[in-house]
Length: 169
Image 1 (cartoon, helix red, strand yellow):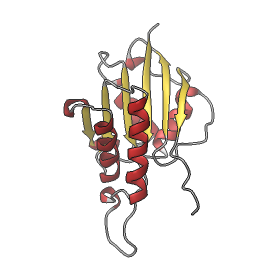
Image 2: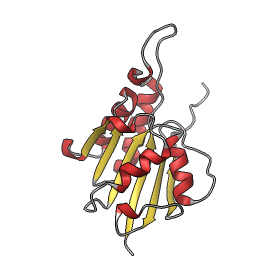
Image 3: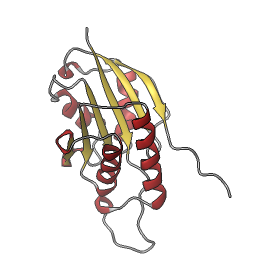
Image 4: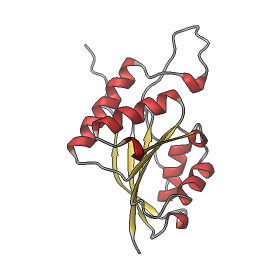
């Protein structure tokens, strides 16, 4: 059986000015969110991280996170796929999307939202995890030859990382 990699990344911290009427879908990254995404991008670049494709929710915060990461790892525009169906997607929706991925893809990255990403991680690894914090990353190795074979317990965690906690000054 072949191995595939699936990397789950929760968007970086987002916010809106107090009292603003910005729709959830349009909330931008905060300054901290931009710094965290840049830091994660630099870390991934230093490790030679290069997926075959990066799918992102079309929410502003997810797209911005994906673009910052993509730029850091020199991902081409054709390898970044913005998908409206990933916005606040539940685990089942995420599974359905992954199962339809091209089998030419050996390493797929999803940039999206909780609770869907955390629930997907738990389900794929068949254990209760501790969730993805903002700008957190979980890289999973899957025992599958085809994405359509995605099922509970088919993965194990290879790497987990998150931004460093803000220092107290």
